[in-house]
Image 1: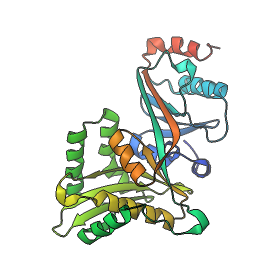
Image 2: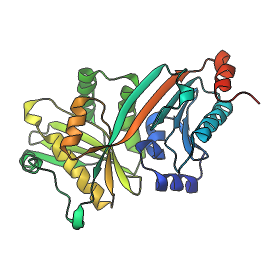
Image 3: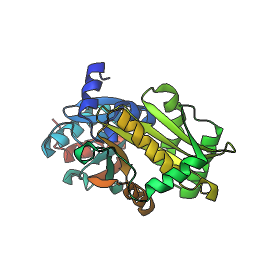
Image 4: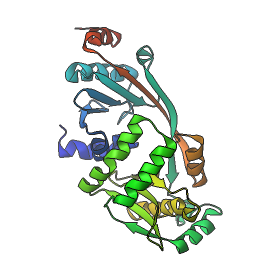
Length: 287
């Protein structure tokens, strides 16, 4: 378990969502541990290594810290995320992901006020006439229905489904997150978005959902503008938009001025107890 001071230091050095301890603990159900300059999240039989160092680090340290975590926690399932996939993990990966993080810079030249780019300003102004934006932490029945529609339509993987499943309980227990909801005049929920504000230098757009019905057009755009305004009010330098995920989501993020910022590589593998010693050998041998 990390002390309050350790958690504060991690947040101060954070630059990706996986460094945001309250967010990761709340949505993964694991507990944060710090080994050197690397953050780990540990559950009953699993482990996530955040391979983005909190300070400059070297590949040998990454390898030694993963070995240390394996010896200490003895997980059966492991997941690694980092800017690149280390060579020593190539042989054990059963699942792989490649993507890029997107960010929206809220600082503008000469200190000018941030504004939606291009024609989005006009579209958002029109959406503002049709929707009212509510800011509260209650994840109610309309939010759950919109989430079900999204998951049925997109059919994402198990990890994404688990993330959405944990959002309601996380919003109930945290004070650093904001749930924004766009409602029309008939009381219908057009879209919602979940923003994390814990990091001192940036905010994180975590997740959201929107109706595909024609009456809900551009509700998500209105929420992005509101999230950007909240982030600016909280003195954030940028809004972390997460991963590109797919071409459609990437286009939406680029439309808002989001730019590909940092490579993301992920690797998942299983560790039956009988394989533990073999895996440790790939990390440098047993002592």
